[in-house]
Image (cartoon, rainbow, N blue to C red; front, side, top):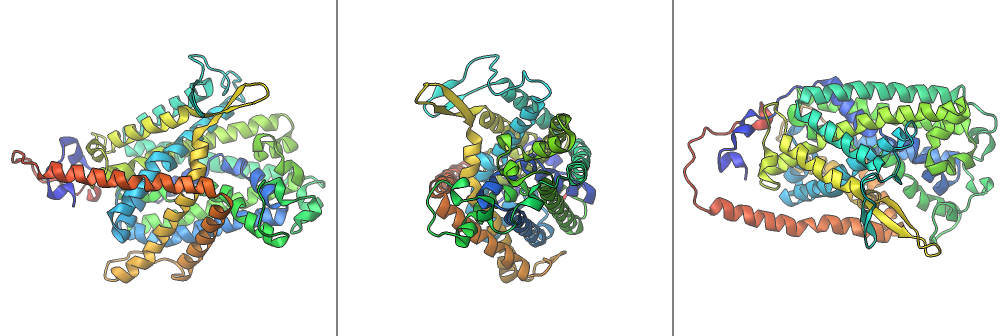
Length: 524
């Protein structure tokens, strides 16, 4: 049931979305959403988990295989249903409205908004390299308000993050072309910066003492590694089997450094010739980023000893590599590169994410105002709602009290939330890839401007790897993954309540509307 069949929309909605984006624009949205700060940080945790260069590269390679197979398979759905909301529309069509709602619910509650908050704080953290007054322990307005294990905080670091969220939300309400221009500019800049850092690491950073030459590539024990280095709980197996168990956890950082490629599907209703544009953007964007990430890790391995990768201060492997190549100034070079990278990443997340809630509102599954567009043909109300909740997540922190000193230390609550949702997010990706197979069975008659490369091998590869990863994560991180699924399941009563309220509202008598019928907003 759509609003087109039940009632005329508010006047602002009639403007609809416009198809203004080409292949370059869509590709920069894919790449811009993927390249953030993760590539410069997550290799440290992965190294601690697997203990050897070969296993580290394998974790990144397997994550890359998942990313590329998932993208080229899902591109079939994007070409078939180039609608605002993308993955939400695919899941709703293949599995029913409940699955679409639960995806949108998880994206709004933590995945998209939490990532916006996390990357915004990462931006401000590295801005603090140049301006030390921007720090997590500087609270110019009020001290953290502690309530149990959590607190409401507004440090100078968080203030900068909030300003970034608000500023990029505002610019994206001014029109799709402006948002796309910012995305294109910063994606080109950060891609160039990443290529430059790879080149520096492979040449100026080269060291005969680096992990590539001095560590065993496939025998972690020869490097002094034991499973307890990266995982503190007991494992059910030992030796090589233990490494396989931990390889799944080691893929989490790489996989989520490569995530958000699906963001381009959210703006499917705003791309020109989507049957060609979206598949090309998904293929070009994902394969480019996966290749750059593998080269970046190779640069780490030829410039740093393995223990310095695994034990990098605050996990800043990229910074350690640049300092090895350029000395003290390498710290500032890396900070500048990450500022460019995170700024562009936040813009892409802000631009694309609001289209999910726009599509949900058109289906009466989100606040009605979010289903309208402004004079610039963008879903401004959805952008504002996204910004408000992202800002709340950026202000929340966790509280840990040292029992010996009774002193409180603070961490980011959205980091916890993202860990909770990791297996859930992979599950939704898996469902999207599975929807390609399901739609081939349910609706073989539908036009498919693009058919998945290597079908059915590519979707099977993704589903098998994703399923193994989720099972491994649930086994090793049962409580955190369980909380993640509970967050999603909490959306079921919300969905039922929302549908009940909407059905009663539509059943209530109302004056006959004389407004003209609403055009299909995604087809303008």
